Image 1 (cartoon, rainbow, N blue to C red):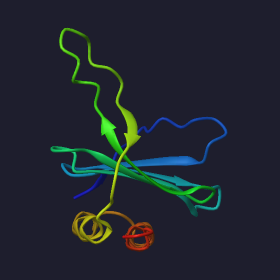
Image 2: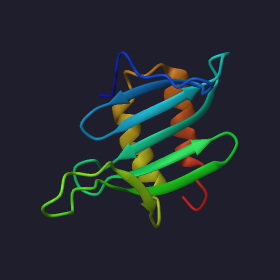
Image 3: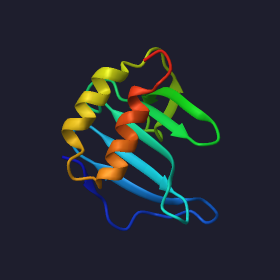
Length: 122
């Protein structure tokens, strides 16, 4: 089950950030001053081939693979970065998310679940 992390770093002039995680997901939710969700990033499949689906009010969806920076023999691990990735299996990820989201507030869980299902070509 997703659990909310405490002491999440907030960035000046950006919406409030909340961070949740479990063994399968990392979820960041951005809320405006009134508490409305203005964006989220759901990182999934963390143990095999991590990918990230990001949705923001202003720009819509993006889907990326996470390059962990660990494939460089003899060098220190680099900071993970997002790189272009192909298709997104919206129905499967939404179903798994639903099973992990019981600890989120219902409004946020529903919002993200229905956004996942509404992914274009999903």
